[in-house]
Amino acid sequence: MDKLSPFFGVHRGSDFNYPKSLVPFFGDRYLYEIAPMMIERYKLVRKEKISVASVNRELALLKCTFNKAIAWNIAKENPVCKVKLFKENNWRTRYLEKEELTRLLQNSSRMLRAIITVAVNTGMRKAELQNLKWRGIDFHRSYIVLHHTKNDEKRFLPMNRAVREILVSVPKNPKSAYLFAGKDGEPFNFRKSFETALKKSGIFNFRFHDLRHTFASQLVMAGVDLNTGRELLGHKTVNMTLRYSHLSRDHKARAVEVLEDKMDTFWTPEPKLEQGENKDVAVSHLELVV
Image (cartoon, rainbow, N blue to C red; front, top):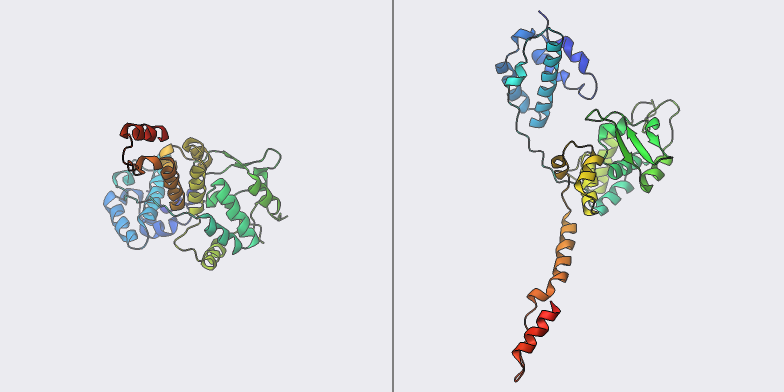
C-alpha cells in the first residue's frame, strides 16, 4: 500500500508551505489508515497554533492530495470529504484612506513604492504581483495580462496613467523575466520592507492584501458598478466583490451632508405668521420652496 507523503510533491507552488505541517502528522501513514477522526484531531491541534482560515487551507490541500490519489487508482475514497471545515470570519473592512496611502508611499523604497502603486490601482493580489513578468505588460495597448491567477484564468487589467508612469520607471533586471525582481533575479520579497514602511507611517492592523480592499473601496466611491469591479478583481460572483466594497467613513459623512443640503427645507421650522397675515398664503409659499 502507498503512503501519503509522496503525493505532496505534486502540489509545489503557492501551497508549498502547507506540507511542512501535514507531513509530520500524515506523511508516514498509509492511505487506508487516514480516517476522518484522525483529521479531526489534526484540526484541533493546528487550531491552537494558526488561524482557522489557515487550517482550512491545509485541509483543502489534503483533500486535493487524496483526489489525486483517487484519480491514479491508488485510493478509493477521500476521508477529508467527511470532515467539516471551520467557519471563517473573513469580513474584514481595513483599507487605507488617502492620507494614509500618501504616508505609506513616502516611507517606501523605490521598488516597494512601485509595487504599492500598482496594487492600489489594479487590485492585483500579492502572488499576482510577485509573479508578474515583463511579457505581461503591454504599454502600447495600455493593459496588464495576468497569466497565473488564483482562479487559473487569464485576466486583463487596464493601466491608468499612474500605473504606466510607475512601470516605466521600474529598472529591468537583465537576469530576470520578472517585473519586480530582486538582485538574484527571483521575485522581489517585499514582506519586511512593507512591514517597515507601515511602522514608519504609523499604520497598524494592515496587511498587504488590504491594498486590494483599498482598490475595491475606491472603485465604489468613484461610482464604478459592482460588476465591473468584479471583473477587475477576478471574482466569480458579485457577492465576493461586495465583501471588499466597504465605503470609507469620510465618504459616508460627505454623503449624508449632501442629503442634508438637498432636504434642508423639509425640517426648516415653519415661519411664524405676523399678525393679520393670511395662513393660506404662507403655506403656498412653503410648497413652492419644496
